[in-house]
Length: 169
Image (cartoon, rainbow, N blue to C red; front, side, top):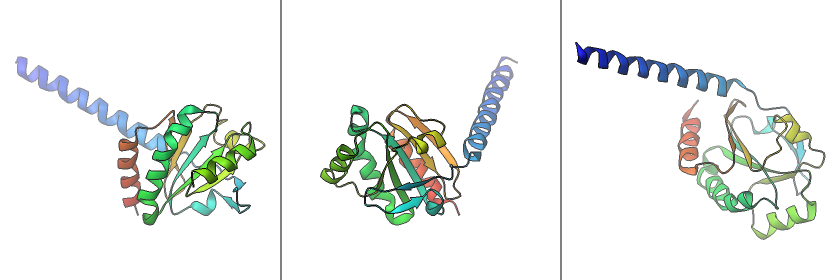
């Protein structure tokens, strides 16, 4: 009798967990990435829509943010690891970041992905009024935001999620 009560409690906990995860997953993947254009440091104009069909990491950062500077080598490593499989990265420098400093940072560290300066704050506003850095969004191939990270992501968990998203049709 006692054993069956423990089993029932365990099954109830598992069911709640499964429903919670399903609700999280369905909510997280439903939000579409905003339709926003931007200009990269090299002058090339692009948009989030042009990245559709790829898994995309959008990282809001600033050269004055120590966590941003600390995590950038891992963002570069993630980009290099997955870029040949349909993965891309967009680094968006915040509006308060001096453009010359952003350009110097990107050039001196040889960032291998697009870097945009959000001069007007329009990109940050379109992603839910991003104010804290780093804030990072992972977008699936269909253009839906799958995950938002405020602060440095757990890169091992991020890589696992990227693997899953790249495997999706």
